[in-house]
Structures are given as structure tokens and as C-alpha cells.
Amino acid sequence: MAKASLHQEFVQLIARHQKLIHSLCSLYYPLPEDRKDLFQEIVLQLWKSYPAFNYQSKVTTWLYRVALNTVFARIRKEKARPKTGPLSEKTDQLPALDSERTENSATQELYRAISQLSDEDKAIILLHLDEHSNDEIAAMMNMSRTNISTRMSRIKNRLSKLFKKEML
Image (cartoon, rainbow, N blue to C red; front, side, top):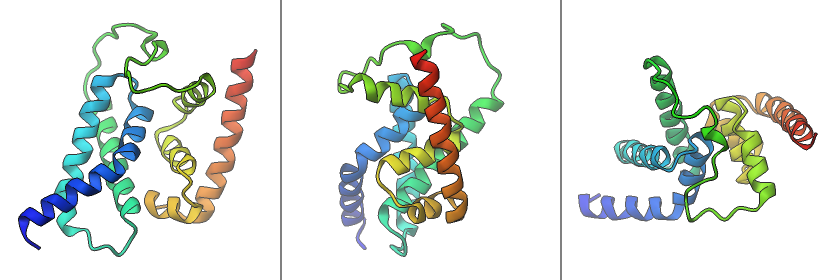
């Protein structure tokens, strides 16, 4: 494939699936600057791996796998880095500054609850909310279908408890 057509095909692929990438970035990073950095990092990793993508799996499966691996690698790197003092202990409670976000309060509450889950559980519930089947989620997360089903049940219970706690 010619380099120009490869580039054009990749740009179209990112344009079609940018909402998916933005959703993933928003789930793991509340600050707009961090989300933009992560988005760029994911796109870079997708670009690097695109020539090797052989269409044996769905495009979204490949995209999620690369994106999630990028997110988890970044989180591991940040945990290894020495921490500086937080600007504010309540930065996760600040309203989103992103003008494109016009979510209703129920959606905001859902994402606030999801943000309290483990990194892998966040990814699993995001994929579920994007209407992927357990088989697809298992392939993207490199887990068994049974493991995904079990974790989904636990995630739903945890979210239910978090919502009840918020209501009190």
C-alpha cells in the first residue's frame, strides 16, 4: 500500500473512531490537558501499529487493545514517577472545563462512580457501555468470556453500592 493512501486511510479511521478514544481518555483523566495528551499518545501508538494490523480482528477490537495498553502503560509510568504535592485534594470534584461536554447529571454521576473503579474495571464497563458483547470485550481485554461476565456482575454491584452511597 502506498504511503499516502496508508496515511489517508489511517486519518479516516481515527476520524470515525475518535469519539471512542475521547471517551476512554475522559474516563481515565479528568483534566482536559491530560485527556489531550493521552489522546495524542494513543493516536501515535495506533499509527505505529497500523502497518502491522492485518484485519483478522475487528478494527474496534484492535483500536481498544492498543488504546487500553497505552492507557495502562501511562498509568504504570505515572505510578513509578515520584509524586509532587497535589494542586488540590478535590480536583476530581471540579466541573469539567471541556465545553463540548454537556452531559446530564445522571451521566455525570455514572462517570463519577466509574472513576472509582480499578483501571481494568473502568475499561470493561466502558466497553460494555459502548455496547460491545462480552466476547468482544474478552478479546479486547485479553481475558476469558467467563472472566468478563464475572467481572461485569461485580462491577454492576460495585456501581450500585456507589450510587446508593451517593444518594445518602
